[in-house]
Image (tube, rainbow, N blue to C red):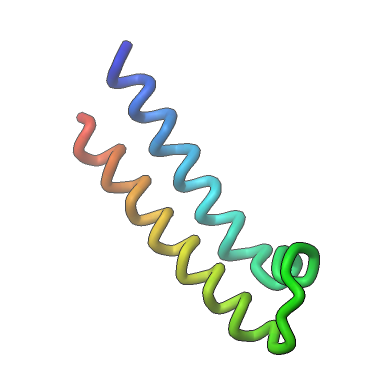
Length: 63
């Protein structure tokens, strides 16, 4: 049961990371008032990538 919960948390982390990667510009426009949206979207893409990698590692090591 505990492994199932850990795997679900890892899948949610991957899902959140992928959403941040693909919708970075939309999220930046909606929530942040940056003058330069490229920097904001690049930051969100980097965070999304790192979050996806961490989620994949959680799933990999929970087996």
